[in-house]
Amino acid sequence: MKKLWKYIFKYKLLFFARIMTISLAALSVIGFDFMMGFIVDIFSNGEKEKFIPIILTSIALIVILFITEYIDGYVMSSYIKNTVNYLRTDIFTKVLNKDIKDFALDNSGKYISILYNDIKIIEDSLLNNIFLVISSFISFIISLVFLFSISPAIVLFITVFGTLGFVIPNALSKKLVIERGNYSNNLEEITSVTKDLFSGFEVIKGFNIGEKVNTIFKKSSNTVETSKKKCSILESIIKGFSLSFSVTIYLGVLILGGYLMYKGEISVGTAIIIIQLSTHIVSPVKTSISLINQIKSVSLIADKIDELIYDSCEDIEKYQLPKFESKIEFKNLSFSYTPNRKTLSNINLTFEKNKKYAIVGESGCGKSTLIKLLMRYYKEYDGEILIDNKDLQEIITHDLYKNMSMIQQNVFMFDESIKENVKLFANYSDEEVLNICERSGLSNLIKSLPDGINSLVGENGNKLSGGEKQRIAIARSLINNTKILILDESTSALDNETAYNLENSLLNIDDLTLVVITHKLIKNILIRYDEIIVMKDGMIIEKGSFDELIKLKKYFYSLYYLKNEEI
Ligand SMILES: Nc1ncnc2c1ncn2[C@@H]1O[C@H](COP(=O)(O)OP(=O)(O)OP(=O)(O)O)[C@@H](O)[C@H]1O
Image 1 (cartoon, helix red, strand yellow):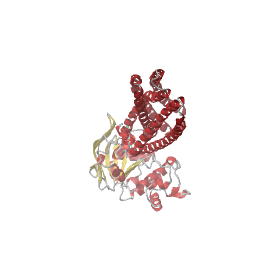
Image 2 (image 1 turned 180 degrees about the vertical axis):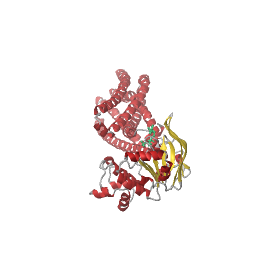
Image 3 (image 1 turned 30 degrees about the vertical axis):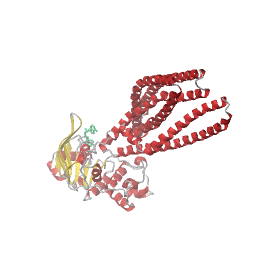
Image 4 (image 1 turned 45 degrees about the vertical axis):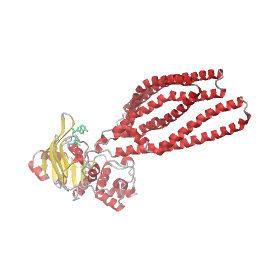
């Protein structure tokens, strides 16, 4: 919660301006209460000389009320706009700064829920309520002081019942805080579920599982609404208590004021002022519990935000890697996703600068896992991964991904043109983009489109084939002058000829360290790699050039002939 104060006070001037305007508005309303009392006394006493002044003062008060309300609304909307904007943008930036592995720990629906649902709760329950509490407090104190000057007995009565009206509902409020936390978690859950279900729209349609998916959604929706209902029930119990005590105070003040008037100790006008002022005492007692609870409940949401935007890397990243210079080394590397099941065992491997490596092995042997560790998706491994003798975990994120990119089977596309998707909004000329597109095997596609590189790719590239998206991803890395390029089955969506041409053109780039995970065992391509790494059951069992491995007549040999017989 502490961290939220940073956002609340980011626009200090507007915050304090709002306290001023809300205090002025509260004072104007109290002024109006006094005016009612004066008007009644002046007319009931027949004080003719005060008729005109009191009418003029009433008009002036109405104008003041209007102006203070307007200024107050203006200041408040400016404060909310700036603060919510800052909060949301800051959280978004922090999420963007997360490491890939940290980001992947949570469903992205959680981040979306925080950015919209939780920030809305913070706006309604914290930002708005802070000022309501302050304004109620100001009216409460002024009214109490004035009432004390008329009758200490009235103030004593209010203090006793006001305290009871605060303490009893407060005892119930802890439960409400917990329920509100549940409600926020359930909202987060339904956002993630909805996002996942919509992402799988094609699968849902293709496999006719609409009914099943509907049931999942209904269950989630029901959970959200049930927790909301629990909050509402608790709120009404608390409100019921607060209302009973406030009505007691209100009626009590009325009776005590009426009694003082009956004894002739106060005028009718003063009795009216007492009644009016008592509303400023009753109202905070009635609403303060619910306001304070709402503010408290935000602390759970604030903790959740803190936890999600916490960046685990900042403290250990200390090495710069302006340019990849010599080698990547894996030393005695072992890794498990789950206890008791080793995915990688004792890997010792070196990728030298500008050399080309192919990783082969049957499905599930650990090829992608090895590469994911190099991309720093997971950090809990035994052994070491070093780039230019620097521990992978300690290299500054920006430098790491500037030097190294990975192209996977699923390529993300912005709903933009081919050109923007290749240059990723950086400043490259059309010639540079066209040149890179040619090297990435995109020339035919671009020639066939009326708008060439300016053609739009559609939402997540739905106007392109899987192979075309992969070629765009390769073009992205090449234009960015990535020094280490990793392809994870990334030519799988390409036909054999295109895959062959593309891999060949990447193998021709001298100043590129290339690591390709491949299932396609094509001799003409494989002979061009400096080293083929053969994996089985999470271990490297053979290493060498194509000819060396064939001569060995061991695992690679059988894998190669098996694949080529299949073809
Ligand atoms: N996130 C994960 N959690 C648990 N187990 C996983 C996870 N990812 C992969 N595995 C398991 O680890 C093993 C190695 O998977 P990996 O993806 O590295 O294999 P691969 O050689 O790349 O396979 P393929 O050629 O089919 O892509 C597999 O048994 C897989 O089921």
